[in-house]
Amino acid sequence: SQTIHQWPATLVQPVGSPLSLECTVEGTSNPNLYWYRQAAGRGLQLLFYSVGIGQISSEVPQNLSASRPQDRQFILSSKKLLLSDSGFYLCAWSTGGAGTDTQYFGPGTRLTVL
Amino acid sequence: AQTVTQSQPEMSVQEAETVTLSCTYDTSENNYYLFWYKQPPSRQMILVIRQEAYKQQNATENRFSVNFQKAAKSFSLKISDSQLGDTAMYFCAANSQGGSEKLVFGKGTKLTVNP
Image (cartoon, rainbow over all chains, first blue to last red; front, side, top):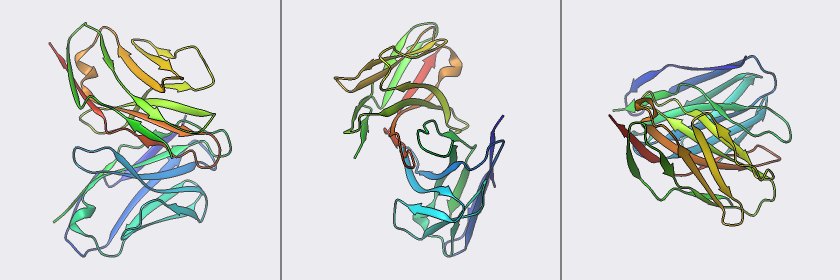
């Protein structure tokens, strides 16, 4: 069976510090991978998605970036965090290729920028 | 572009009763999927049920069922025999086949099941 991991679970960072959130998927190959952000009391906003190693598409221009160094690893980064980067970050995967559908989510990372 | 609208920010129901959450969507796609996700206080997003648009039969998963009205672009979720563990945020979402299958979410409905 497939599982998705995210770490850390909780993170408190000062403004201007760097960020690295990691997501890994087990039990599947060549998945589509996604990063979402959920601000307090709001819905999910798609930040990045990837259909393969080194292939990243950005949905929202901002000071965040994403990378996919390995097939089942997806990293969300920032060089300098802003207060507005606080939120709940969710990674998701779906079966790669045409005709894919359901996305399955990880447990999330709660980021607080002070 | 797809849009998903959930018009009920909050709802409550008594334990063991039935509740229906509303969702409407707009899409120009012919083939698409619709989903309901549940987000309990732990905040992990959990798939509740999904519906393939080309299937006329409404999807069911135990106590959860949908009323899919394709012409009206409506996709409501019915929870029967509500349980305290059903207390959560519920998000309706839509995507389309082909490409990256990006999901578009509604803003959510906060459901509280009262004892």
